[in-house]
Amino acid sequence: MPAVASNPSPRSGSLVLYKNEPARVTGTERKKITIVRLDGQSLSVRPKDVTLLHPGPVDTLHELRLPDGEPLVAWELLAGSTTTLPELAELAFEAYTPASAWAVWRLLDDGLYFSGTPDEVVAHTPDEVAAEQQARAARAAAEAAWQAFVQRLQQDSFDSETDAEFLQDIEELALGRHEQSRVLRALGRAETPESAHSLLLDVGYWAPEFNPYPQRLRLPATTPTYTLPPLPDEERLDLTHLPAFAIDDAGSDDPDDAFSLDGERLWVHVADVAALVPPGSPADVEAQARGANLYLPEGTVPMLPLAATERLALGLADTSPALSIGFCVDGEGAVADIVIRPSRVRVTRLSYAEAEPLLHEEVLAPFWALLQPRASRRTAAGAIDIDLPEVKIRIHDGEITIRALPNLRSRQIVREAMLAAGEAVARYAQDHAIPIPYATQEPPFSLEDPPDGMAGQFALRRTFQRSQAAITPSLHAGLGLPLYVQATSPLRRYLDLVAHQQLRAFLRHAPLLDEQEILTCIGATEAVRGDVRYAERLSNEHWTLLYLQRRPDWQGEAVVVEQYGQRSKLLIPELAFETQAYLRGNPPLNSVVRIGVTGIDVPGRQLSVDLA
Image (spheres, rainbow, N blue to C red):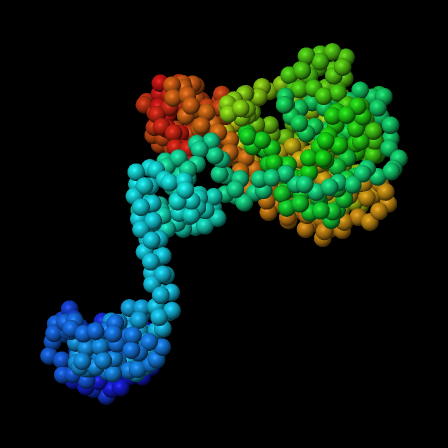
């Protein structure tokens, strides 16, 4: 609506403008006037709320028919000048009447040839009119393109050449960058990331395999490219004479820990990442922002440049630089006589499956004999090991494979060695007053009358409290350790790298990060750690559902692990996947039932099943 410049007092019978519509004045008072609108509604309004168009008299608003005239001729005569509404009415329609006043106002309101107020009407120049005509044509074309796009979407199709801008509106919502979508609103669909994801799949804009969760959680999708310095020229303890073993999942490409025995001393060797990534360096700043490696079925997004793995991962070269943590384990499983040194090691890489038979041979049997008291000690201290199915999901050449991870003793021995190293580092830091990020965990919530079997393990997992990083050592209840530092995965976790930076600084008599700086590192990591783990979980669910979608006839076993009235929570062991269902007969906890898939909603991460 054009702005108004002045507003003479109307009288009864006058034609006025109210909310850009014509109205007739039927009564006036000192502070109020009464008007009747075109629809017959009578209103009492303030004089300043209306604009006088004609003093009248106007008997009825229905007489405001468009009069004959030559408004374009009037514009040509007035172009580039100003006039008033009455004068323009005289020139364009040969008389200033209520009907011509209303016709002139509509010209002003349209804004192509004229604009302004009743007291000052501006006649646009030919160039201004041409520019506005072009703008209107562009808007009309855009509206036509929009309507055509909406019609295509309603038919589950799109035009790759013309619809990119409109589809981006949906994609921004699907990726969590926007909270609203004009397209979804026009289609009457929910404005949620899941709804947007579903629409993009329906029209074929996204392939079913597209994984939106890392981007939705605003996690980096590319590898850092910072240049790393050469290894510092420093003395390293030569431990290459000791057989050292890095045991990990088959296909792992970033081995960062290994162990060896030197008489009664166990050495845990860890990739010496802090030697190339000191505090405050570009690679360190980037790693802090990422918090940890992001492990996805389709590949790993590392927190450090690839050169860190290529130069430091254990066993990729004939010898590897390491930060080695040496300690003895007494008969009760306590660590003692702790030594930490930069070292050089020669590492043999093994998968867990390859290591398993060696546990019964001289190669690895001594390690379990040394570490078994540690496992017993932790159990006695309240450690809780959850025994639930685990799988590894991988994508190779478009194929999805889901492989169960067996509970091998080789996994246990590696875990015990790394936990022992974490306790050794914690005690070393405490003994030498080194500020360091400790890992802590409060005891689990109490669970009255827990069920047996897998349902009991499922319920027990729910009682766990989240582990925390802290500057003060404290109990880690889940591990059964009085104090603990995560320090064996500096290629994979940022706070492990911080622990190494502090240890190296101490050993070199260099300045340490103070407690406040360590707290800053902890805060930055905690801010992203949850998103990293959440993205990994959602991504695993995404690919598991696609795995099943490609196998419409899949059937398998599920275990009832929880019940809510008639609804059962099911755990599918071979997929390590949880879902819910209403099952006939309402089978009790720990029942093993055979199920088939009845529906899959990939965007909503929902799996519908029933008894097979």
